[in-house]
Amino acid sequence: MRKSILIGVCLAALMPTAISTGAQAQNVEGRVGKLESEMRAVQRKVFPGGAGQMLQPEVRAPQNEQGPGPGSPATSALADVNQRVTSLEQQMTSLTEQIEQNQNRTRQLQDAFDNYRRSNDARMKTLETGPAPIAGTGGPTEPDDPSNGGPSNAGSSNDGPSRPTTRPETASRPTTAPTKVSVEKPSTGDPAEDEYMYGYRLWAAKQYPQAQAQLKKVVADYPKSKRASYAQNLLGRAYLDEGKPSLASMAFYDNYKKMPDGERAPDSLLYLGQALTKLNKPADACKVYDELNDVYGAKMASAMKGQVAAGRSAAKCK
Image (cartoon, rainbow, N blue to C red; front, side, top):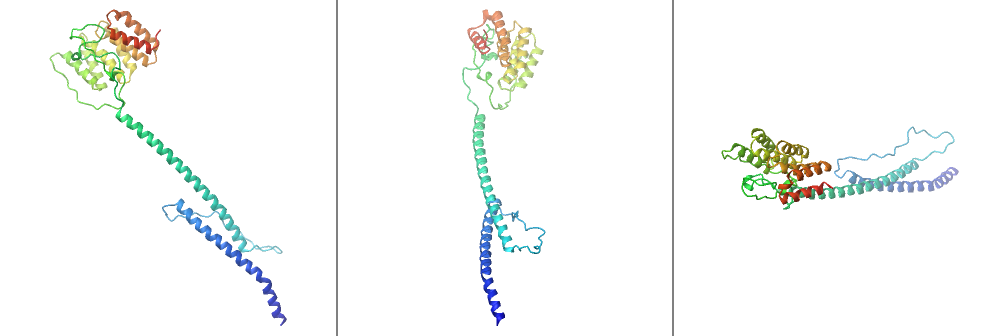
């Protein structure tokens, strides 16, 4: 009888502990279920395609667990689980914040890339269409083609009445490469004239390397022809139009020094001043314009005088 009473007393004493342990286990189970649900949501964000990948938790069970020493209170397994679940919750919160920050940075990068792409597309469209040529701009008038009225403004010509035409393309090169077209070589029975006209047509078609080779050939093969001065001057222009002012300046200088009485010698001095200005040598350009006025000023047409004044202004001559 006394033994039964003692057992009942022990059960009554243990009853609150059992109830408390059961409640704690139920609470931990609920927290674990919530963590599993949140982990699945994170998994869907990190691995939207699935691929069966899983994030490994950083929490590990304690290593080298040893039993409590004599006289030390034992730590319950439920308390260990509760501590690990708390750590998991903290890591889950940190991971969620990192994901949100990464998503925000990704959106910012995407917006910046979209803006760059729109801007780049607009620039490419502008380059493809190219700016419209503006009439009335450019360098000196270029009637190097005898069919367009003879030589330059420097003096008279035996090729017929002067009818200068302004060529806008000599001042600004197109932003896109011109389409290469077939250029026909003339055949009039005058070799010097035909060779020069062929070089002129190549230059007009903006086939500058081919034009340069052809014009050099004219100067070398027909040095006594009046077209030698034309060809040497146009050679400098071909270099200038191709964006090679250094080579252009040498071609213009050679035309003036070797053929000072040639019909294109004044034009070469004018273009030489422009080439030197492009080479950032304004002082030398001013000397060239002074030389042009001194040597050819008396027979320069008013149009060329205006071009000389414009060149001196660009070089800031005194």
